[in-house]
Amino acid sequence: MRIGELLKQGQFSISFEFFPPKTAEGEEELFQTIYSLQELAPAFVSVTYGAGGSTRERTKRVVKRIHEETKLTTMAHLTCIAHTKEELFNILKEYREIGIENILALRGDKPTGDFSPPQEACTYAYQLVSFIREHFGGWFSVGVASYPEGHPESPNMDWEVKYFKKKVEAGADFSITQMFFDNRYYYEFVELCQRAGIDVPIIPGIMPITNFRQVQKFASMCGADIPQSLIERLEPYADNPEETLKIGVDFAIGQCLDLMEKGVPGLHFYTLNKSRATLMVYEGIKSAIRL
Ligand code: FAD
Image (tube, rainbow, N blue to C red):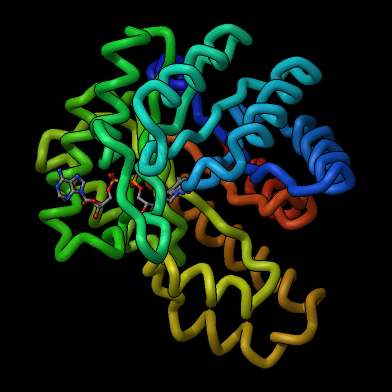
């Protein structure tokens, strides 16, 4: 099923994001997670991609396994920054051959050190979206990333919205946001997008906190603000995983219920390949889900 079509039907979408594990054991654990989350009948699941192409084979293998071993709609993330157009074409062609219909088109973070993109590469995500439309027409439903607090490289929110719009004009059907912990950023961003004429669904990305130090690191890398009141709740329990989980889940439930009340098109959970926190959040919000 193409995610863009599904969202057009107005159905509320719950979705889960995974990363491709490095080891066979990690992959088996991931599939246990996938089987338990499958019970929640997500609209789709997605698998991340290493920006330098480092996970090319692993991402493909996990995407293929989910597609073949489950009934889940699967979306492959694809980053363009370090690939030639020929490589991008071949990856997309392989996905089409196995029946994958959804791609999250990303630029990826620029590798550190001496990096120059390959000749004629797609250096921004909007170019990858155009490339997909040019070579694969409507076969893929194409999603893109968006940043309610601004991408770290964007000098201000007008810039952010301008280049997000470019991705939509290039043919993106929907967007998934970077994680955020203060819903006001999301609401303000959606309003800016609407004023700019962006009309694709913008699905909020939710990260249930299970590890305080890890989430602080992620948040500072991607520029997501953690509210002081939440830091004060979490900090005393930084070395107590059970208490952190309880606080993180409780916070995520409140965040999701508020977003659902305001009519968001869906919720996309960053699962970090574990099911427990996501299952607990789902339990707390399921009575509010409109199907
Ligand atoms: P772009 O949309 O190209 O934007 C990058 C920056 O360039 C922005 O500041 C934008 O405003 C600016 N910009 C865009 N066009 C122009 C232009 N023409 N001129 C000047 N400036 C411009 N990373 C991974 O490596 N693998 C993943 O699987 C992955 N999945 C993600 C999933 C989600 C939902 C999100 C939100 C992010 C994900 N990322 C992933 C992170 C993402 O790759 C990084 O944030 C990356 O730095 C930007 O990618 P982008 O596709 O948003 O880039």
